[in-house]
Length: 415
Image 1 (cartoon, rainbow, N blue to C red):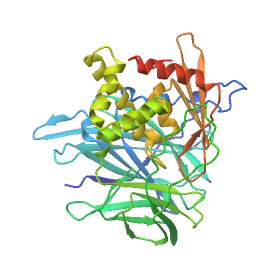
Image 2 (tube, helix red, strand yellow; image 1 turned 45 degrees about the horizontal axis):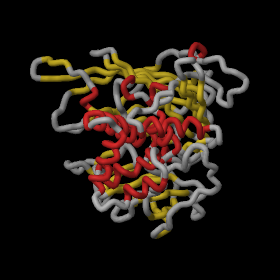
Image 3 (cartoon, one colour; image 1 turned 60 degrees about the horizontal axis):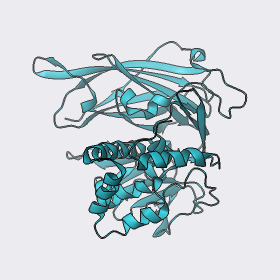
Image 4 (cartoon, one colour; image 1 turned 60 degrees about the vertical axis):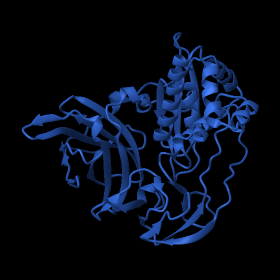
């Protein structure tokens, strides 16, 4: 049975955000409105939703949410199992200091053993001029667990992921919205968007990992494309290409990337598991592992050499690859999440203690036992995607070297 609710919101009163704003020091580049570090700490997050914002009409934006059923606590009532969610949204201006709109609804989620997740769609009136932040609170009434997310709503330009929607047909032939940007090769998808035509660059995924945080990056380079062409609305995609860059014009100065893979499980091969080790190793040692005739043996040997025994090695590698998996979940954009600047810092240093966001910047702060802060600043490369670029500083080398040494001695880094 298809479970999709089209929900009309019940408007509730405006709520001020002044209590959420934090005082900030004048030497801080990012104004600190609210600490959002829980977004990158999976153990503090009750649910793991995927979202898609879509400008469905000039007057409304659709928010589609999918949440794994395994995240819920279900009640038994006769032959039925269900849970209830309270969905509250609050729309704020770009500075998060003025409320523009709000609404709430109760959603009943039935348990279905044949489905992996539940999804629902909310229509939100456009009551903002250009950009806004959507604060979305999802509360499971049975367990009283809550997740809060802040989503940026972009109404400035017609070219963004929020003006595109990718669909595939389910086993019953019904059109299903795809959430996320990882798709399967040789599977037909339909791309719908607002403009009459877009440019597409067919090619390969960018496998270049982020350079260390103290390196200066002079120029961004992309791999050669297979084909560049204009795309008409409702086009069928993803037959052979592994990466599709979608842009407004043929210069591809700004673009939105989507990926297609032979198998979404291919990230668990020995070769794929070795690649993130480049964040821990000197280039010479990393290449030696890649050049090994037996990648599985070389991978196991690396973790055993880091640890004192096989039990500690197993714990260490699970800890490391859990961070890699979370980096892919949180930061995949123009390339896989573990390859990005934020993914690199997250894998090696862990989740930050404080996170502050603005429309164009994200600041991560690590706090040690002495309450000393270490700061990483990330900036948006363009307004068309969520790609964030680290401000690389030579002063980052000391903390990076320390973190690498700890990992190689069998201990995950903790600031």
